[in-house]
Length: 145
Image 1 (cartoon, rainbow, N blue to C red):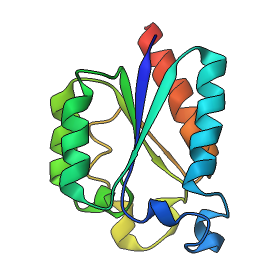
Image 2 (image 1 turned 120 degrees about the horizontal axis):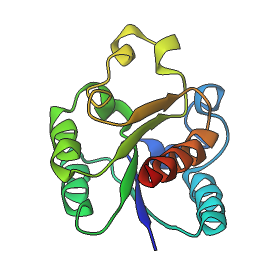
Image 3 (image 1 turned 180 degrees about the vertical axis):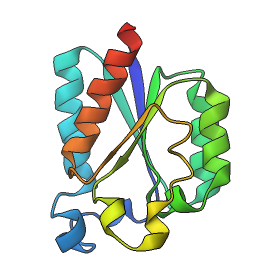
Image 4 (image 1 turned 60 degrees about the vertical axis):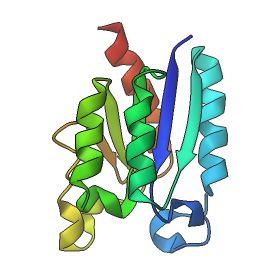
């Protein structure tokens, strides 16, 4: 069975409470439930990891190549600052998709730059939590190639 890792970065544990006008009212648990349901329909497994610590995210990604067939990552603010997460994604050799609930290109200028976009298969931004499901669908399509 194919296995996928969903990595969520800083402050995503606050979804549902944090700036609902930007991120909506769905919680991180809602995202997990959405993906579990979709994964079962597709016959795959998804595991979830959230951390507010950059080093923990890097370590989880480094270990992913031994376990997972792909990564869905919403690195939160680390998207715009972390070369370490970028390098970890590159080192795994497994496909990854970058997801953002809000449209980072309609927000502050500093959010327009993603250190991850150059090393992932693609980026889904601004479509709300459905972006996670679309990312899983895209990873499955990529593996069929």
